[in-house]
Image 1 (tube, one colour):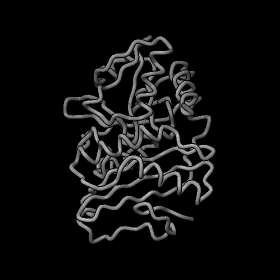
Image 2 (cartoon, one colour):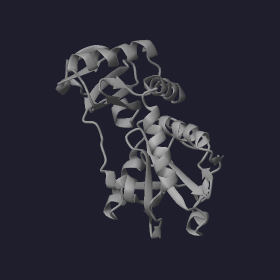
Image 3 (cartoon, one colour):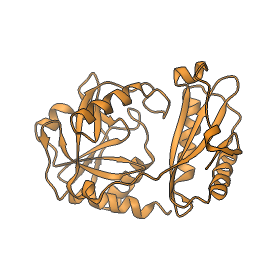
Image 4 (cartoon, helix red, strand yellow):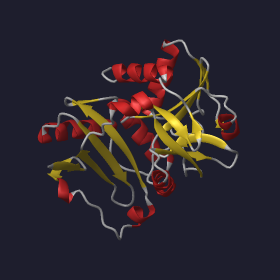
Length: 266
């Protein structure tokens, strides 16, 4: 199998970084995960725009352009004869910036996750540089491992003000009747799928409230459906947050999921 390093196709096993690098040790990198279906990269321009914006946001300077990265992704797909896959782009900073493009197996989830929902747990913590997709992932890792210990699929991060802002690998949404609630982009990562969810919500006639969701309101029973979104999952309903239960059929969430998946070819 192959990977790409600064636009050069290499054996996948050579896509490595030195553990003695200060940038590697400090997580000084930005990344994106692209969904490839039938050789077609969904929302690639949006992903590359966010990659470069994240690099700029953490002052990671580099010589790479959107056009060159796009071309390198296409070249790797052709060289590897990729049909369905996840393609991860990782851009490390430092004196000699390096950009890796590596294909991995496409993430797929059972239909039951969308029909019955999944469990999440809450975890107190705030992401560093929350509006950028950077390598500062220790909180994400610890929180997700905590969720797994309790049989959860995702951990929801709660900030010092008691606001449930996002998941470790997802954006977070809640419905109260016909209104969709989620935190504004100045507080969370501006997810590619998050934007699609909001577009679909408007198309389906839902009201949108871009204000953070407070934990106390969540457990007071204010919301009727809750879900998470990400490139790999579109919109996935939650049946449990800690000990709080939500009941299927999650009709609003499933409608948004279907809409997001239908738009991925645009």
